Image (cartoon, rainbow, N blue to C red):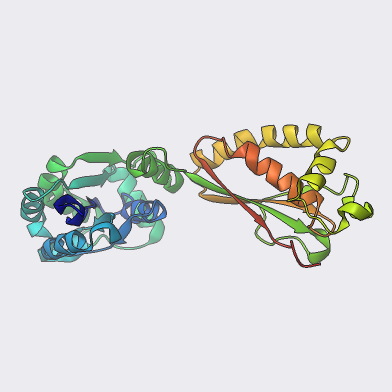
Length: 294
């Protein structure tokens, strides 16, 4: 083992800050969905110890995002100096979330909560005070995202565009075979019913086999209507999966059913998984809920 091999890998560190009401919580949740380790409402004085911890942990904490904001009250004033100190040691990125005063006022009024800095004044007073405090942080930010015209789904999508690993899946699709006689999967987003195909169960030589066996697969996929259905169904799902990514829907389940979940559904689910695995931005999982129950 070389000396370089013994050196712990240093992961990424991102500071998430910005105006109250601009979407820090939404951004933090989106980062967590992308696999970042997220620490919320950390005082700036704790950034250095956290950086030390990430260096000790190495690969155990490959990507850490820290939400720092004015909820820290007087402690927040030390953020610019803390950022400079951290950047002298290693690259640190800063994401600053902003929005227009009008939009921020509307968001605070919608949730009926005061601005953390308004004190005895108005929401606008609090926003102005926060802008003054955040001015030097905004100036040093690496990425500024104006969320004025974004809803929470659009903001989450923007965060994924900025901070997801290159080539990483933005949607996980589970294709699940099942047997109708055991009930519908409660978490299914789409259901395909394969009972329109002849049942291999009635072929004695296929009865003990499953849709994972080539003999059953060949019979199922060669049945009248099977290839036409699978091709059309896979094509119909292409715009759906694209839309899920645009709307930042991270997971979906396609349930493929037959009577017992042993032959037709298993073979069809495998074929669909093979075809849909080439969909850009989509990671496909294949599972057979009821296989082996008989």
